[in-house]
Amino acid sequence: FSGPKRDGSVVTDADFEKVAPLRKLTSLTIVAGEVTGSGLAFLAGCPELADVSFGTSTITDAALVPLLGLRKLTQLSIASTKEPLAWTRFEEMAFLPSLTSFSATTAQNLPPAALAKMRKLRSLTLQSTPVSEAQFAAIGGLAELNTITLSGLDDAGAAGLRHLQGARALATLGLTGSPGAEPHLGFIGKLRSLASLYIDGTLLRGLAAASG
Image (cartoon, rainbow, N blue to C red; front, side, top):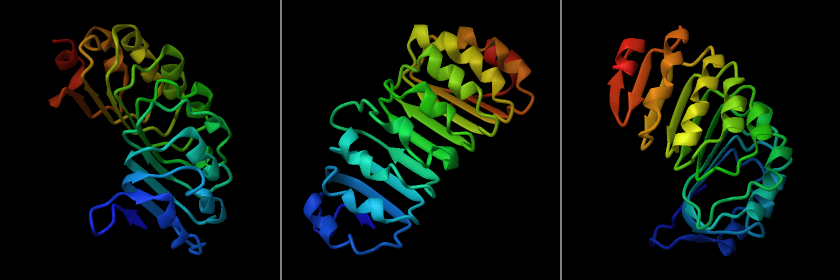
């Protein structure tokens, strides 16, 4: 199931009455929508759901509650929301240990404990997010993490980049809109698996390139 609708209008709670019987739903994409927890309540009865993507939407913390008991979800993307999420109860999500791909915007309130539970995560994207020291520490402990894309780091958060030296499987690191990051990349040489480093879209390779 995906949106917006063919007439160009956005998806609303009323539209989900039509898809509520789809108990074997495996993928849900809402490109643009005005949906609430009420509209998404049926997702609690979709145990096969593996991929959920919210584009520009009015998604709130309450709208994510129906996802609590889903265990097969492996990909979750939450793009631009009207207001930054508080990520209330996100740490309780049953699917966290199964996630392989997670993408979010303005996720500065994302609990580090929730990140630490994403033990199978291979791809992480945090846009417009001043990642905190505690969040970086959790990310650095993810042994299977292969690709990290970050934007909007502030000077204080950039210091936490050093924790990524614990991500031994990291092959690609992308940083955009984070001018204070480069002085904190001295650990890059310790990442033997790192093949690509992108800074504001420019591909750099190796510690010498990162430092120079």
